[in-house]
Image (cartoon, rainbow over all chains, first blue to last red; front, top):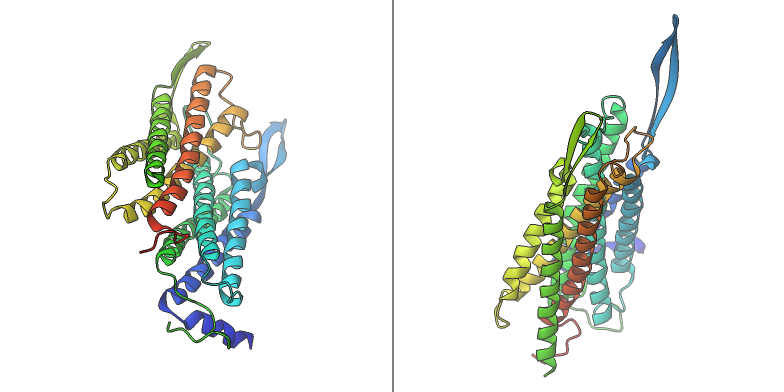
Amino acid sequence: MAVSKILLAATSGKSCKILLGLRVLAFLATLSAAIVMGLNKETKTFVVGNVGNAPIKATFTAKFQHTPAFVFFVVANAMVSFHNLLMIALQIFGGKSELTGFRLLSVAILDMLNVTLISAAANAAAFISEVGKNGNKHARWDKICDRFATYCDHGAGALIAAFAGVILMLIISAVSISRLVQPNKCSFPTAASPSVVP
Amino acid sequence: MVKLTKRIGGLVLRLAAFAAALAALIVMVTSRERASFFAISLEAKYTDMAAFKYFVIANAVVSVYSFLVLFLPKESLLWKFVVVLDLVMTMLLTSSLSAALAVAQVGKKGNANAGWLPICGQVPKFCDQITGALIAGFVALVLYVFLLLYSLHYVLDPFLLQKS
């Protein structure tokens, strides 16, 4: 019953099919970015000096919580993936109030807000990672990627997923705004209302 | 009469956003300080950080775009395009502000775990000007969010108030 409902929601109308597919992709991209960055942690032991003949070892950990930009990245990606999940559920299960101006407008505005949120988070993390990868001679900040290579690699993977999410959210927002101009019903036609031509 | 006040309100908003983006651009570009301690003399400029360069470029693009849209006549069909471009400009503004804020926060507080020392103690005037530029950038962002909602309302008429 639920599966047939999902199939009908996805197949009625071309822009609905595209929108649903884009939202699923954006949900997966931002969720994977949040998870990969959230589990990003590397512990390494370094030799920091010598006392006579015995080397002194110290253990250092690189965690995503050390950098506020990465914390913002994880939180923002989680929020955007939750928004996409909510919109997918709304498109599949929320058939009755589909064409009211309030619902179309709120979906468009929420999509716009989430576009700005995800682009801010992805760019902040990207520029901080650039400083971590290349260092900064003028401020005398050393690069950390030569010592914590796995941490940097995982961070790079999360960043790529987040930027894919940015592009997808921009397209989704453009499609939502265009649905404001030409509203078309996306849901399963109920028995009370006549079936609409997709 | 209502349409006239709506249009004037939109023009005022866009003029204010143009002024804020231009102010952010100018304040960041003119921020420069030379500090010397012991025998070393170092100069802090906005070009030291990639994030600040991106901030300057993004605000320059937004100011030029706002200036051009100020002169768009209201009957033009390009207004539908302006809605999408407003969204792209808002994205540009938030991303540049967010990146500059992230780097400036490291400059002010440092990052003890990575061994990055704060630089604001040595170049306080530079730090103050960067803060001013970031505040102007934030004002430009807030104005652009309102402009986005305004363009949506003016162009697309989402509440279907006008009988076509």
